[in-house]
Image 1: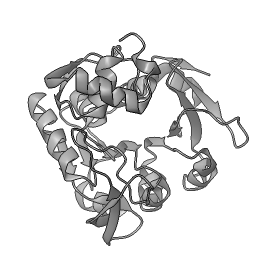
Image 2 (image 1 turned 90 degrees about the horizontal axis):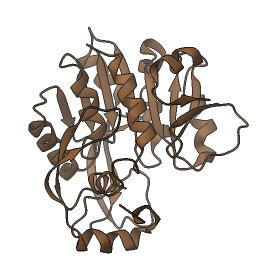
Image 3 (image 1 turned 90 degrees about the vertical axis):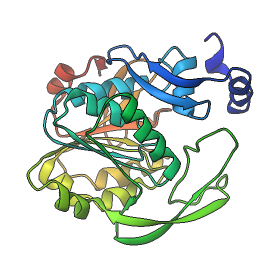
Image 4 (image 1 turned 45 degrees about the vertical axis):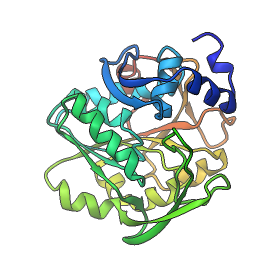
Length: 282
């Protein structure tokens, strides 16, 4: 859509209202097998994908996730902060033997995820309305409600824009994983928890040390990158995911900050990543 990417969020909301998108939307991302997602003009991810010709929302991250998913045929995959399930669907479609566990703290996103799995004939995605953090028990998350939009910024970390609070069960992913995947290897994870990634990672230290999965993490605050790195075993390498140039770049402690927010943490060597990823590896 011409000039859509230049609109600010306020202008996009006007545009969405004037150009409603309803029903089963075919998602046609280059390099990824087509699938469908349901929309009532309320799913920000679907709208961003559709109105940018499927190139303007986390394109590099989605293709990288797709490529990594191809390596996994019978393992466990975690989608932490799944929203309506775009990452879960991509992972689940590669093999019906994969078990994809999708966690989100909002019930409406999980309801939509289940609908999306239904229209894609997927029965290997399991949704859980729980907060993945560093303890088991109960906690509170903040969110905001806006007519016609499924919020994508609900968080365990209080945010100015989130004026509502709700209780939710909290779990350590290590403990959950011990119960469900005794005979399966954890291959792949995605974490998008709106600034609560330090707590999520603290609750999955055994998974990282025993299974060494590839992990995609959204880090909104670059200053948290070093803190996040310390929660990974030393063998892990970091790649900055460039959504605009279809590339990923290996970075060190003192690399220049990126404007992008998604990172790959992996024990795979650079030459192996080059073999796996469709895009460019720098």
